[in-house]
Length: 615
View (cartoon, one colour):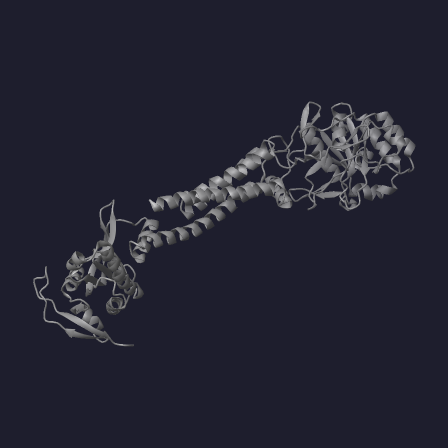
């Protein structure tokens, strides 16, 4: 009953430990304590999909790159006359490109501005970028969330002729990885769209006026784009809404090849054409979650593809993440509480694996599970509940030992607990060399007749306590009580090489203690003990039935010890011949005449111990 109560308490407290772990993980998630780790763990979803292999090029977007070849043929970009760009626009307009998007800022006057302005106006589908200056302490160029005039715009002659404008800010996170794009920046009269969003509006022939996000969604052209509180959309580097096919890629041609009319105009028909720097030396490259570098114009193309294909990634709602953290921590806690360590570890590993597999599957469907806190909650719950198990089992063992130690020997309690843990608690036992001692009160019946019950019990308990203390002091096991007698065993269940000598020392000390009690406390009923000791083989183990067990020793060795105790006078210690043979060098003993003991067909040789030799 006690063990069942302790077990229930351990289970309930273990679940509380798991729950506390879950709550702490929830707080970490709510306050974003592991921001960088959370971001990088989400990157693993891209990396695990083997995204280093590019997919087939998408046919909606074409990139005209200002590459090394173009710089070598036409010179440094800053030295180009604007007529180059005007000529490119004319070529693309003749090829019937649906939208022409520049990732190049025309903010300063340069030769050929009139030609460029005329080309922009004539094409009527050119979208130009604006750039927000980084605030002090913000070197990433993150567009502000509040209206700002600190922005670099194209010359008015270009802006007025363009069909739309969009901010070209690409904002890496603190670790330098680009994961999100601010879709809109609030303005005084309207919202400034991202360059990719303006390009999508141009491709779909929608108005450039962009609605503000509401409740984590931004309506656009029949789509609801999921955004965070800052109005940022997650880049989806995957090639399809189902998350298969690798990193999205786009047909890319050289600026100078288009200018030299070495590219088939059909490539641009009805496409969005993005023009920007792709040369590695231009300083417009960014790290992506897959660990590969992408140019700014490629990132705009990826964002545009995400919007046009409605290939959005959306983190699961925070409430679901919190519930998952609590649920998984509790499930792990239950596994630890009800299974053995190896099985619980296996369940924990399978739980983490199942979560990751679920995350990969949902990621393919556009849902992003938190990859840090739920797995972390599982791992910490496993460690925490296991630590609690170890501590509670030690505490429980101590409580059981202390409680049942009042009824059983502590050694027996240890043996029982070990058998319970290993599942070996069953009837039967094994043979051991043991020394058994019995201490029996002489004349107890007559003492009982003369002594009131309360005083009798007090006296008996006082004397038995002295005997028990002497046994325990010498490493013996108090096995059982017989009303006015006590039985002790050495060398079972705990090994004791000098068991015979220890038993004799305990017996002599017990006799001295009993004698001292009788002299010191005259109020106690006078009692004397006869002590019998015998050594030999005996069966030690669990005796009784399946429903009620008792650890004890049985055999002829035990019977002889009991008969010697019955025959020994008060205050004397008698030992069997086998015991004497083991200790004769360490004691002074007197041989007794052969004794006829009840149950023995032959006389038994015994000895009376006079003293134990010092040293």
